Image (cartoon, rainbow, N blue to C red; front, side):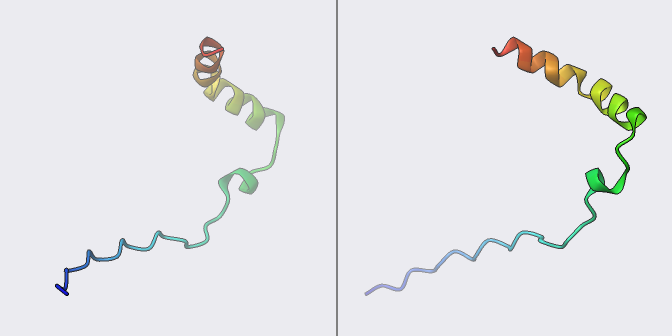
Amino acid sequence: MIDKPSAPAPPEPDRTPRENTILSEPATVEACARDYETAAHIRALLAKQR
């Protein structure tokens, strides 16, 4: 048998626990309104795909 060089294993993904930014801020009316405005372009894009 011919020994073939094996490819190096891919690096392990970083699985370090991080703070959840969604859960770190309270769900206020202002925060929800800000998120809704920020995602307006995404909703428009999804509406075009129907």
